[in-house]
Image (cartoon, rainbow, N blue to C red):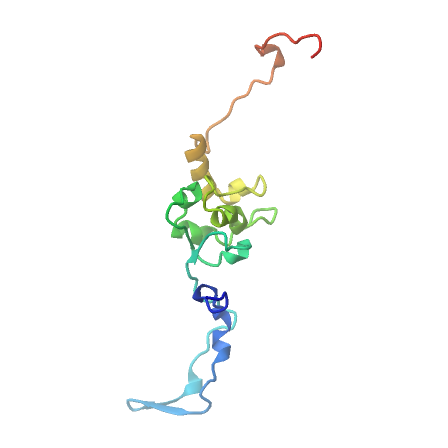
Amino acid sequence: MSHQSDPKFLDHSQSRHDTIPAQNSVHRQGTEDYNANDFEEPEPNEEAPEEDIEVGQHLKSPDDLFGYPIFPPGTHSLLKKFMTRELWNNGKNLVDSHGYTFKHAIFTGCKNVDSHIGVIAGSHDSYNAFAELFDQIIQDYHGHEKEAVHHSDMDYTKLKCPPFTPKE
C-alpha cells in the first residue's frame, strides 16, 4: 500500500473543498422548505478529527505525530508506560520556553520503540513544560520525586581518596 493510499495519512483538512455544494436546490423535509445553501459551513481552518497513529521506524519527524501514539506489542519504554490519551491531549501542543515541543520530546521514543526511556529534554525548561510526563518518568527511573533534594558537599578537603602519585 502506498503512503498516499494509506488511510493513516489522509489529509482530511481539504475534504470540504473537494465536494461540490448543491447550488440553489430546494429540499423538502416534512412541511418545511429550505435551501441546501442555508446550512452553516464549518470554519475553514477547523482541524480534521485526530486519529491514532502507529509509531515506529516509518516516522520521519515530530510532525508525523498527528494523533495519539499507538505502540506495537513488546514496547517496554517508560514513554509507553506513562502515555495516556489524557496526557497526550494535555501535552501535544505544548512548547517549552526555547521552542522545543512536546512532540519533539517524545519523538525518539515513538520512532525507536526499543528505547528504554523514550523521551529527550530539549532544554532545562522541558522538565517544567512537560512535567506531567517527565515527572512520572524521573520518579520511575531514578526513584525520587520532583520535590526531592540532592545534597552535595563540594568541599574538596573532605574527599577520602588515596594520595596522588608524583606523576599525577
